[in-house]
Length: 604
Image 1 (spheres, rainbow, N blue to C red):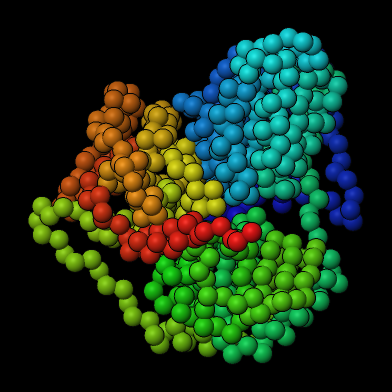
Image 2 (cartoon, helix red, strand yellow; image 1 turned 45 degrees about the vertical axis):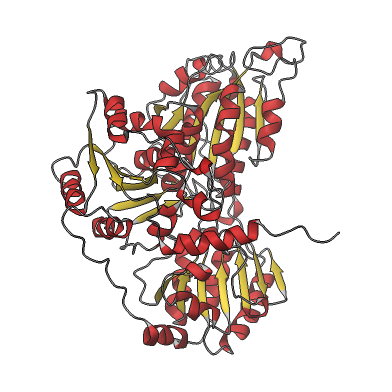
């Protein structure tokens, strides 16, 4: 996971320089205009395009519709911007999500209401994962606002605010641009707010405005220079002192990284504390990829009853644990079954620290807190030494016979061998969560999945977006057949973009994760000939190679081909496995989540 957050730390200038906050709280100087007023560049559309390029977006994912066509013309005209047409709005949103995970910020463009409500699910997922994402919607003609007209692409009422109201709960700022006088201010406020809050924003632009010149766009937009958030120094010192006292008297403290390390931009500070303290280091499942697994004191994923071997025993037996950026929901807590005690915990959120049952310190940034605490802790390697004593190396899957049906654990042993610092793993919601959690990530290897929102099908669009942003990495995507059926179309966009992703389609005939929570006939899906489906999408245009494997021997040959002869192609490998072949972790997790879901109502 890349921990950069758009241009919050700095903003690139066209000449390659970086715009940083000036010293002593001054303001950035305005440079003379290079764009004369009334030129074709002094328009709303080109201003928005230049803003996107300035914050680090070079690819925008879109679906055209009559309300956004003129805007798309102006985005295409921007030299630093590439428009990626997607098959549907949901995948465009997922692609912007994946792009933001690699590049730090993403963007998508759709049309009014039919496009906006379609992309909404993806925007909600980005909101839950704290990803800055600019969702741009082509809106109605500015003359239609305030009239009694009924427009197409609406629900048949003269009220155009339905889409806006839907976006209000899943974005941190909403801008409806239906006149040119305040368009500059609304657009800049929306984008800067998204970067500062690390959340999606919504910008609706009337379809008749993008091409009209206006004096407010007569200059090149001055690059953003956003004020950095600062800790309250007195609160920071008090928090560090209280935490140091708490941890230094502990016998076997541990530290656990969570998903909000990303939004706090605190991964380096977390490692700094791990280096100086000597504590055993674990990661929550949703934080995988944010904590380096090659760290000498790394002990694995802490996920309660389904943790990696020996990790839960060390964490839960500790007399003090520091959680940096955790989210304790029903999934990450395995149905609320974690054996943790509040009085032993320090919970560090992006701007708040809570020590045991109190005290609490607000306006304290995680990055500052961890870095300051690192200098105040005594070295204590007891927990890691305990882990080292009890650790038994994991075994390997039983060797398969020739032509024996392929097992999932054998598949992931081979995927493990494919990983390097030049690869990134995208794990779909489902059993891939659990199998990919067990992968040991080499230094520099990326890892992404959507645990908080858990929308099946997310990985297809996210793989498209991540691969488009992380051009230097080989993306390896693991997706189940049920999830693939939700969003399969945009494999075609991957081919059109010339991506060389390797996709493993795990065909086990249904929604396996749902089966382990609560089984029923609705969890069985219609089987597709997935390789033939992708071949049909390929249709001889672009580079694509497919293979269907039934045994380990065929899998080995397919991986050799995908990483060798066909390394420049999109490689799609359909893996046929038994419907009941799941990880042991999913079996345990499913039963506990099922128990949590089926709790009877409390007595009234």
